[in-house]
Length: 139
Length: 366
Image 1: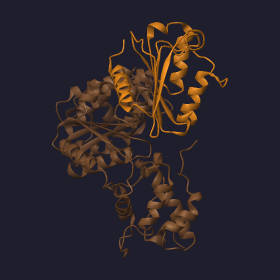
Image 2 (image 1 turned 90 degrees about the horizontal axis):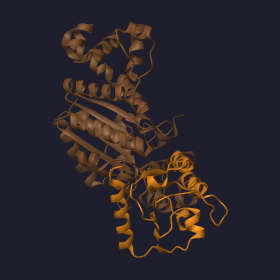
Image 3 (image 1 turned 180 degrees about the vertical axis):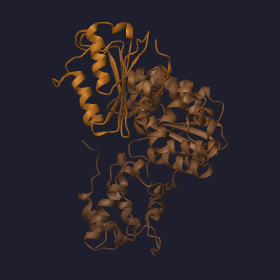
Image 4 (image 1 turned 90 degrees about the vertical axis):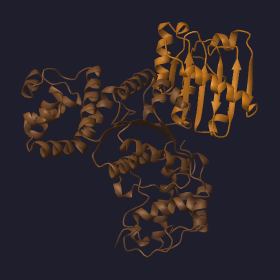
């Protein structure tokens, strides 16, 4: 993937809920994030809806992300689903209907739009939108 | 036989990889002709500090960008213009990013490098360092007793120091320093830090609090620390400066880290340390070399032993993500050492090209 050769990488992951799941290469999503942070010098920010992350294992997963250096923000009422990548070489956005959960990604009928190094104004607007979300006071 | 850098008329290694806090102050000076706006903000910040206003500055840039160098330069310029300023430097350590440790680092810095200024002040104004003298100067019962014990030396000084850095003391130890409770909650530590800074800003012309490596806290503690810093700023109408440093590519990453708009608004200046530019690179190296040159050196061009095409070639060979002083200077150091070994007196583009494989920072570490 483009971001692997692109450090310093900044990724913002926005999803109502996040569960661990296997990626097509067989690796767990959490392992992939850890690899990005540890070996690729990536900075990852995650925005999730606390009302959708109440189960014990959800909280454990968020704690695991925090321990690996992911900046986890809880945003009440969050319903957006977005992955935003920003590096010196690439700017990418994945705007989707799916949450970052195995059910959303592998079982439900969802849709996504992927933009890589084009529509820069859309990327900028999405970046501003997520910055404004981050500026909001926590619950 | 002298050291390798003496061959090039340097009195000390100009490329040494050291924590900027370990570099001697005389080697810290402005060397970024490409960052005129940053220079302007630095001047205005220093001017505000010296005019005893309450002022805040945040500085950011990627790792190796020179943030800690910038902080030391601020300290140096403030001390030069306002010698009675006092500094408390702390950072959020990656290994244990808690307020307890942040507080401890700040207090240890104060005790190790600034406490003598406070003792000198008390001695000068009261001709004594007795408890009574301290009580007249420090308007807080616990801090005055603590400082009196520290200045008195002996075992009580050790216990008083431990109390102030937030260690848990036994009741016998507390009794020996005549203080009732340990600083064992973050709230107690925060209040004590605030009181200390208040006292320092009253006694000296300005108290400057520096908080480095803000990026190491996770979101919740970052928010709490940010709120505490905001609270701290609001306590002072004047004679207080806050300097915050964080590693980031963009200013907006402040919010990714968990810090708030409320704190950002209170920081009057924002400084971004950008990458080195090919056009101003020779001037950067000249200014940097000048600080390390032997006093009686007759070198005609401070860029020596490099040539302009040599350093431009080096920068061109480096990954753009690494075009920062923290990577560029160690690379210069490797080449200069090699040239010294080969008894060469010029490091030009040809030399760089043929030895580029020996320099450490070409690509980002994987």
